[in-house]
Image (cartoon, rainbow, N blue to C red; front, side):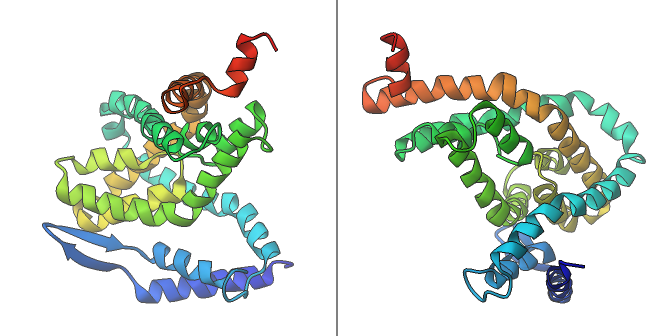
Length: 269
């Protein structure tokens, strides 16, 4: 009951977003789909302490703590879709497992770009993964949240929370329209470890391919579940060591010297 204002705001946002409905517009040969979730996110930003101040900082913090609870209901719903589609999921099992290696692709794009822009060890926390809750916990355990790695992972986590859902929903539409990927492959690619991002992406695909709606949701949910299960170990055993190695290489290329910590170790300090 102490969060009655927060629950009331959420109810109003949901009603407004659902009344707006799904908005589609043509973009070349494809269709870009904007879902009610996107409207709710954008309106919610303006209700916060930076704009209309209807919700204060405490409300924002409480809302963050409730996300996990609400996503449990969402994942329970997706669990009911995985069962009927289990034979198809088993059939493409190797593809679901191997696609997890694609989740570390962010390292080879993100770290060179981050170092080029002037970031230092922040780039390791920011670019080792998509930086959702398990990755924030991993960086906190390995490096601590007060250091540059913690700052990097939190920066990407916040950006992903604000813009990730919009980005994934629109990106899925563009990929489906312009690239020769099967909708099942795009649904599997949606499962990066974030239920909200996966839902936005699969929602866009389901609007474009309504005859595959349930199967797309099942593939997305199964992929997201696998990302949650093995994504943490992938980050710990592969992504972080590769990030450390690539960061040192890119740092040396830009600054013509090793990072300060490596120079100290080399000199025995």
